[in-house]
Image (cartoon, rainbow, N blue to C red):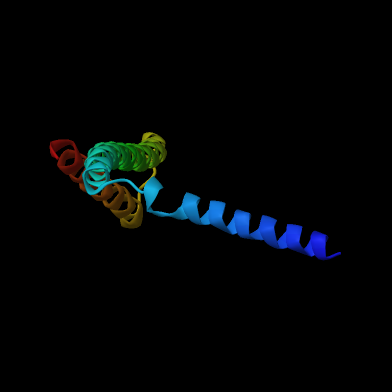
Length: 131
């Protein structure tokens, strides 16, 4: 039994010695190696930063494009709806006039409001197209 305990103590001491040698200062890089590694890593980080900036510019550009497409489609839809309403109202009034009926002022005012809205959307589209 004493022999077994002595063997365990000897193996434990040997293990501690080997571990201490492995974690000792012999595997640590020198200051010059550390600075060289830092310089290489710095170049890598700078390249990544440049890629991030490029990607952000790309995302901003794409977002602006989507915003412009949305604005254009919205204006186009609103203008087309106004034009359809104007044509419909004018057709009704023209048909009534052709039958010899008198048109009330409210109907004429309604068409004028639609025309004014159409002009406002036209101005909005012009401003959008200029920018």
